Image (cartoon, rainbow, N blue to C red; front, side, top):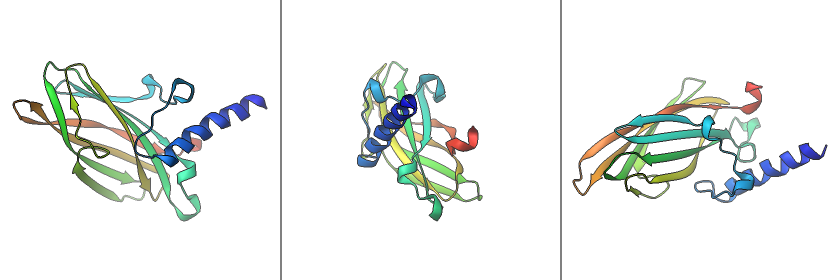
Length: 166
């Protein structure tokens, strides 16, 4: 019984933090729910992008077909140049066949600059009308100080209710 309660508290605190600040979450080691080997990676032009998604039951309303998923993105500059993330473009699909394109400047209100070897991480979320979906996309970067634009792939990842996988 005690281990179940502990697991619930850890999960509850994790979700609670997402509810307060769904677009940027700083978690200490005690509540770190992201496993390095569980992240989906891609490497484009020496920029590594890793993604991990999870379902947020507290931000969802299953009776109204509102399923909220969060995702953790880690961007690593493996090149020898300084780069800046300018914009993003997402293709979001749900299991009803509905496709949505989302585009905008930067990520979570920022256009981060990454020097060689630097890593930038952020959390965000997506609301679906089904318990299954998929996201993929592209970032537009530029080199600095040359201002040469280039695209970086955001790897495809699934948005799936956790109890469906067990």
